[in-house]
Image (cartoon, rainbow, N blue to C red; front, side):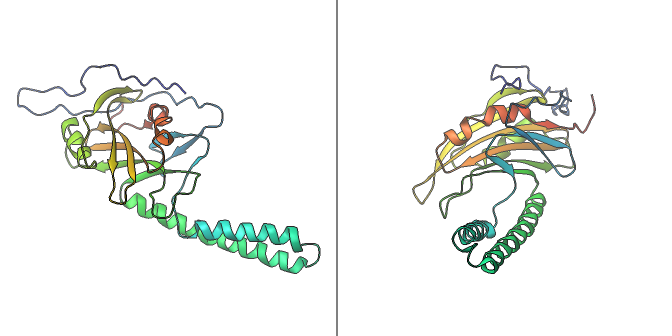
Length: 241
């Protein structure tokens, strides 16, 4: 998928005025992203942020009921195959249980998404593969941090560095919505696993938006999609231009 991202150097978004303060930065309005076959479009609840979702991924959040939902569905299916003809009431009961668990799981997921929004995560996208118990779910998300005053890219870079155990040097990239800083690093965890992260940071007036990819699986799980997803990111600017 080609959304016009380039790692070539581009003009700095920030200009310094005589008083030494950064000029306020705003994103630009870009045409809607063109989706490849199998990709879908996700958006924030308020519609200000949209982003492309690759096949096998979906907007959502992990919940304690995920495994129970799968188990109930599996039991209901196997029960229907093995006992449906001889005991239709048992099959109907298991299917009812599976549906009940699924409803409860949807409610838990809705609550989990609300909690994420309270943390500034306006779009959360998870991979369809279930993580090994104890591992973080492979996902990517868009997080917004609000400030009462204009943010500089330097401040945004410093803030994102703190998210990494060993802060990498960012690379300036050009997205359709404006200039971003791209971070990428692999951090060793105490349990012996490796946390692979890729993030893109953009500034819009007093808002800093971060698109962050996280996985404890093979790094290819996010490396293969990161640039395409970042190129599809669309944010309604706080200042129209």
